[in-house]
Length: 203
Image 1: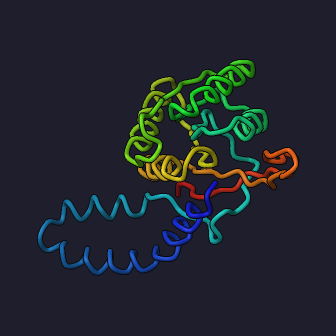
Image 2: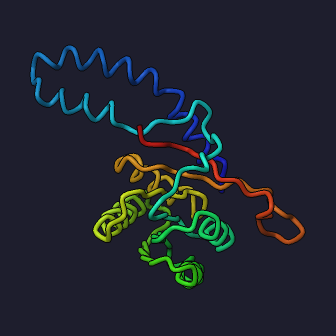
């Protein structure tokens, strides 16, 4: 994963306090104009997702999810997460370039008794397409009875992960990232070093 993604998350975390102050000041003034709309904005502010004090805080092992959504590039990380967290359902956001990997992950998930949905986007560089695909997966999974859903941002291009991250925030879902040491000799992540980090969590 390109470190630019972490730079974006750190920036969001840093400006959060300033945004809260400006939102409070602006809310007080605009309340004279339209109290009902301001009330809705305040409600949405207080029910937003929260970043851990340090972005990338280790995941609470007690948390379990009905479904996990992955942005897809390679298979190693989704395989490990599915095996580790044992979700009942899996959603995959793939590009045409990563479609083959998505099919491998789908087969692996089904072997672990997890239902699987795949959304393929035309452009992995289009943040909006990834966001729409993630929101569509959330809706489909909720229709299947899933209530606890998390979004893994590890795979795919940075733009795909950002789109999925935005959808996770809009839907008040946990967003996750799997940290690993890259094995230069094998040219793949060393999953023995893997750990799941929490990027954002619902209040």
